[in-house]
Image 1 (cartoon, rainbow, N blue to C red):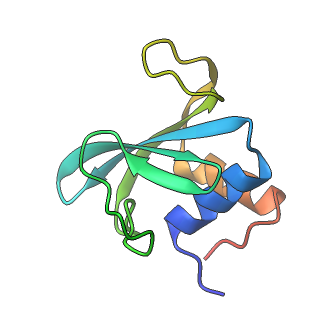
Image 2: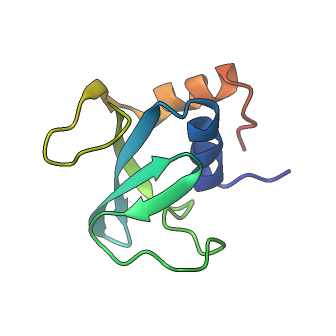
Image 3: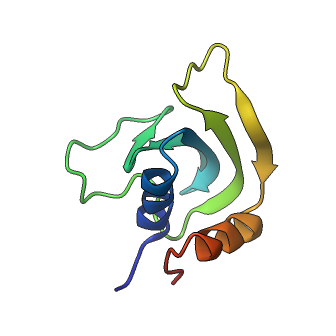
Amino acid sequence: MNNSIEKMLEQYTIKFPQQVLVITAEINGEQDEITIFKGFSSSLMRGTPFDPDISVLPNDANILNIDIVASPYNPETPCYIEQRISWEVMQARLFNAGIQIT
């Protein structure tokens, strides 16, 4: 099975539903913030497509960092579990959680 980055991160949040991932990424030369919670992705800075098959976080995005926030997520007063996790560290966590990395 060929997993996209977004699908792998969505699988992670299904395994850890008490966590919300807030991804800061550069997409097509523009910075975006994307939240992933319980298997669903949503952009905080752009429109999110209604079709779940359209990726919010394309594979060619440059992931700048990932924050893990406690659920429920309140953008005004987020409860950070961890901040500024690199994509490399997150890949190791995906592997340790049994999520196939492609």
